[in-house]
Length: 222
Image (tube, rainbow, N blue to C red; front, side, top):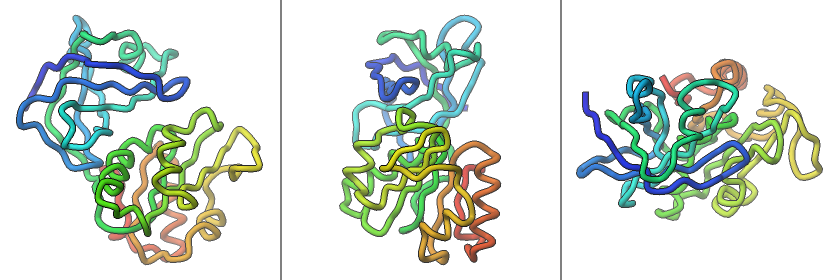
C-alpha cells in the first residue's frame, strides 16, 4: 500500500467545528474529484489510526486539501487533528472512492458528508458546467453549514438548505423526507449523489426509490 508522510502547510477555520487542512502534495499524486484517502497523524500512538477523508481541492493545486469536522468530545483522530499545527505531519495513503461526477443531477448531503461534493462542484465551476445540478444540504443549524457562501456563489437558487434544529425564514426546517424530496425535485430519472450518516443514506435511497429513481442512477460511497 502506498504511504506518504506530508507536512501540514496551513490550517484554517471553516465553521465553529470544521477546519481546512492544506498539506504537501507528493509528486505524481492525483485523484478524481469526490475521491478520498486514509489519513493518520504522524505521531506515536496515532500512526495506525486511519480515517477516510475526502480531497476538497482540485488536482491542479500544488497542495492537497482536506475539510474536516473536528469532534473534541471523542478521543479519536479528529480530536487529535484539532491539536496539530502547521509543520506537523500526516500520513496519507492510496486514493479510493466511488463518488465521482457521472453527469448532471441532484447532490444530497448531510453535515460533513458534503465534503466529496466540494471538489466536484469546484471542478464543475472551473469548467463552467455547474448549471443543471442541484445541492440539497441538511444540517442542524445555520452555523453548521460548510462553505455556505461558496456554494451559494456556485449554485444560486440550486443550493437548498434544510435545518433540523433551527427555524429561519431563509431555510427549510426539519429532516429530509420523501415529501420534501418530491417537492424539491422535478425529475427522478437523473443522477443522484448521496453522502452523509449511514441512516440518512439508507432513508434517502428508500425515498428516491419510492419516487421512481433507478438504483443504477444513485451513487453512494461503498
